[in-house]
Amino acid sequence: MVQQEMLGPVENAVGYVLKEAAVALRTAMDAVLRPLQLTVPQYACLELLGQRPGLSNAELARGTFVTRQSMNVVLHGLEERGLVIRPATAARGRELPAELTPAGRDQLRAASSAVSAVQKRMCTGLSPQRQQELLETLAACARNLSPGADTPVPGPPRTP
Amino acid sequence: MVQQEMLGPVENAVGYVLKEAAVALRTAMDAVLRPLQLTVPQYACLELLGQRPGLSNAELARGTFVTRQSMNVVLHGLEERGLVIRPATAARGRELPAELTPAGRDQLRAASSAVSAVQKRMCTGLSPQRQQELLETLAACARNLSPGADTPVPGPPRTP
DNA sequence: TGCACCATGTCAGCATCCTGACATACGCTG
DNA sequence: CAGCGTATGTCAGGATGCTGACATGGTGCA
Image 1 (cartoon, protein in one colour):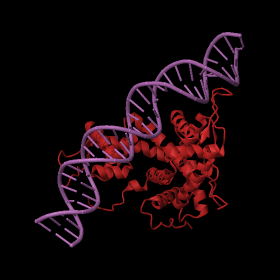
Image 2: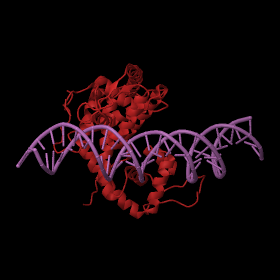
Image 3: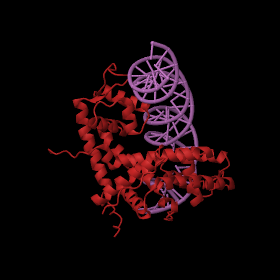
Image 4: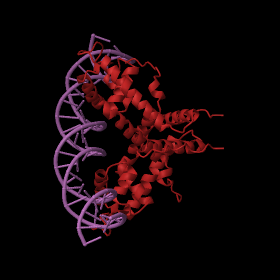
């Protein structure tokens, strides 16, 4: 195969590099989470539950960008492994608020540490200001594309 | 180690907003490509072929972040619809260089225009400098996470 | 020349995730 | 109070993508 390093315009498209970075991050996270017997959605679920205990299945699904059905199987898997608990019956409505077990908190600690290392590696060479800028810019992009984007959100304020 | 390396609230994690933006972009692209009877991978394949004709299946797969197998079915689908052509037999090695048909070029033009509009909408409120910065920062992040990241790439030059 | 090595295309099997649909439970409004 | 809309959990069904494996063809090295 001829390795013609012809830099095509694709590499200059925002969407392309966005996908590229997302795939790279996903792959790296998957690699460090595998020794912990966790998939990325499972980790996302644990992380979200750790920060906001009592979230329902649907809320967790929205927070991790998957459907309720997918989150349901994730939750059942974590439940069988004793990492999270859910009441057998709903106290209010149909919501079954999930919470971490002590074992779940332990797993989360290890996983969070590993993922944090990956993020740090990803941001190698970026100044804190630049990282913050990236954060705000990406958030603005997501808002601009959200369905109810009738009122386009202006970019974050420039750092003085 | 007493002080665990913990992440802040999910909304402040780079990985979270990165995923959020990627999902939003994917959803928006899917919405505008559906009227054209194109999926996102199919569009990516057409776009790549339009810019670099003669790419093989494996090269297209790498360029669109999927496996050779997935790109194979995408390619076959586009071939059946008369949007791309591939030689029946390999002239060199086993590579089957694909190219766009005139119909494929037409489809690509329409799709590319639609996707470009989406990207523009995503970047609403972002100055050109900020967009360029986003591009370079994301590229640096992807490089930092790529498997052969033995030599971490320094961030792009600071904007004065 | 022979041989290990890598890349490509392809097949089968499996995992993951989503779309569509349904029954239930709450809130609101007339 | 009845009815409508909304949200939740759950059950198939299907689409999509990946891992594992194989045969083939080119490449580099002894």
